Image 1 (cartoon, one colour):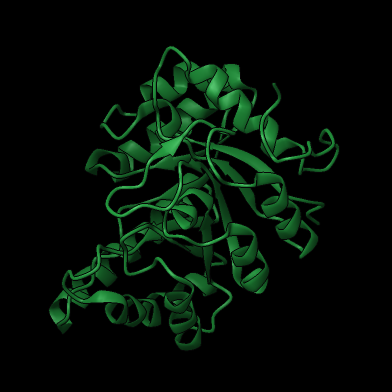
Image 2 (spheres, rainbow, N blue to C red):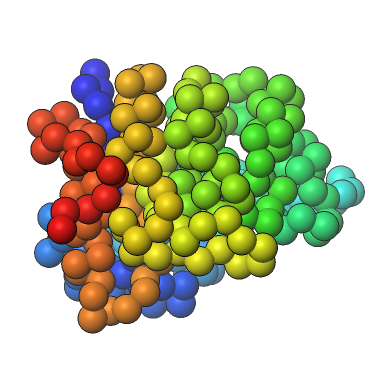
Length: 279
């Protein structure tokens, strides 16, 4: 039985957004001391059978473990052919998760105004959620700024339509802050549907692309958010997900995130007033 949340780190922290075949991750992640890895598998070779085998084998060689899988956004269109194609992609993604040995697949929606919208995501989840549930897998639906999955009302619509143990919220602290929402309030409101928790800091609400900053340099109150989630029974992953800013400061940036997360795990250090990293 789980006794509390665990900390993982996303490959985006080491690789950035490029197709690096996770090579920087396997070079630098072992030194961080966080053994569980979220793979941001956004490129075709990542999700082929040889690609998945390579990820698993390199984890074994490096003393790491696949924790969760993030994939490209939900992309169902407005007609049945689009829905069929996307359902087939997700059938393979469920297989890919099982091949990698993970239980959570994370994805966000598409930009507002694109084909299909939130209704198409709901139509897709109606098809794939029962299959995921039958396999014991969880689909974590992530919020993004400027996305069809951005505001509380988007999740209200989603969860009123999809009542499945296989579908839950991925609360991304940085993206909710960028969209003008308090992650503490979100963690309270959706405590019963919280399946995943991504940790990144944000300079503040803004129009256009959000500005993510080093831990403790933005507006997110991590201690309040994580304390709220954990006190309400959250036992999933706390994912360090700061996109690579500067490789010369990467190790220090990620250690600050690890310190924030670890103090909300069993046996971790006590929370620090104010929610920031150590001085």
